[in-house]
Image 1 (spheres, rainbow, N blue to C red):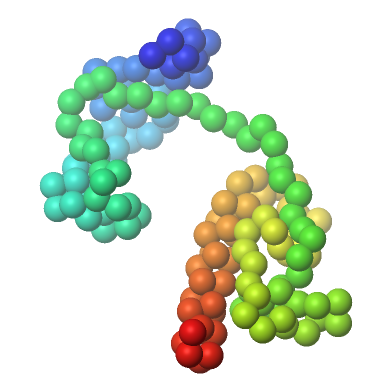
Image 2: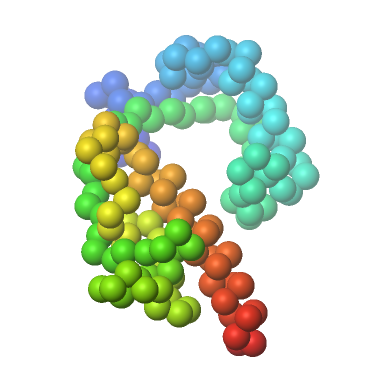
Length: 148
């Protein structure tokens, strides 16, 4: 692919025929990477990713070269807000009272950071997953309780 080759030429990506070379480029222990790839390939055979719960249709075994890696760096931080939520991820009104049945998660929520936010690159991804799970679980519970 032309775009990947451009990144390889710039030193931001690698295409290699060995896991050892890939491991060296990403600065990890080759034995650990080989073990990780072996585990992942076993999940592909089973049709279920036990580590990341990846759906079967997205499991593609890594059993033949070439192998690719891409370096990435934080390029932008996002702004959180303007919704406020309870600990159950219920959106609250201006009086901080939960609005029944209304949930929010991820970057839609404000008031979750303090002055350390700038030093926590990529925490938004983790927050989106965690708050999404909490909101989803509570929305299901709310629906069950209301018989909907």
